[in-house]
Length: 121
Image (spheres, rainbow, N blue to C red):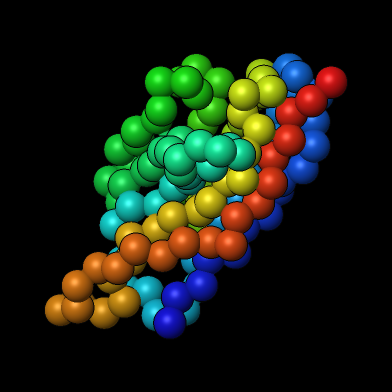
């Protein structure tokens, strides 16, 4: 069993910053990919940023230059630094990880419970 625990959400004003973290625990042999998606009210869940086990990153166009994703392999944790936040960044942010629990097993995608980010003046 694998668990993803998120933290760092909250309410900020436009232009401010927040950092989200997501820690994976449990049966983990390798984390192939880890990152964040978000879902705003009335919209579909969308990719925010992902990082692979080779430190390749992929960002949504809407957050490039404002958000930075990094990972601490020793802690199985990723950090999403969000700067210059705007009202359109308001959403529930979900951590996602593709994890192989043991060598020889297929990888599986896990989701966190979600953390609310609200940007409003």
